[in-house]
Amino acid sequence: MFCSKCGAENPDGAKFCASCGTEITASAKASKSTAKPKAETSKTTAKASKAVVETSKPEAESSTGMSANVAGLLCYVAAWITGIVFVVLEKKSTFVKFHAWQSIMTFGVLTVAQLVLVWIPVVGWILSIIIRITMFVLWIILMIQAYQGKMWKVPGAGNWAEKQANK
Image 1 (spheres, helix red, strand yellow):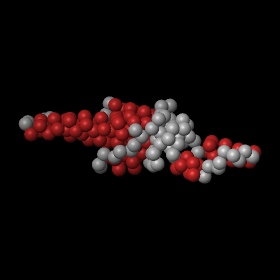
Image 2 (cartoon, helix red, strand yellow):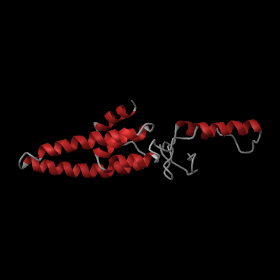
Image 3 (cartoon, helix red, strand yellow):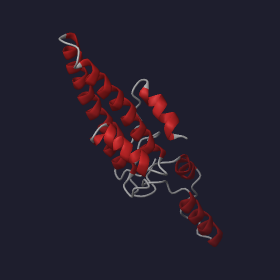
Image 4 (tube, one colour):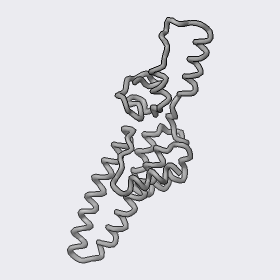
């Protein structure tokens, strides 16, 4: 399938264009399969195809003015803090809201657990180090997945974040 914004070819089932980050919607996929050959040049065909292009243009930006995949990545930059910032700022992109809520839930819970465990001698300290390493690995993975336009779910937090984003 081809991006309606930049024309780049993307694999079937992609949610965002790999080239420009524009969200690919179901209506854009449908318009590709129902497109008429270019040989038809009647005025009604031109008007109809123009209407399809205007109505099927996917939402490429979040309400912050950034592309959705960049805003999704930024939800994780400062862990749960930037998650809170984007929950407050974002009004229209479900993709960005999902990543903001997942950031809050994932890193919020892990931060609290790490802070509690640090007060328990030896065993708590070891577990605290394991949690810090887990947080770092998740931080990298989640930023990459968001930038690629994927809604990769952290077990437990992902489903909750999806429900919150769809409210």
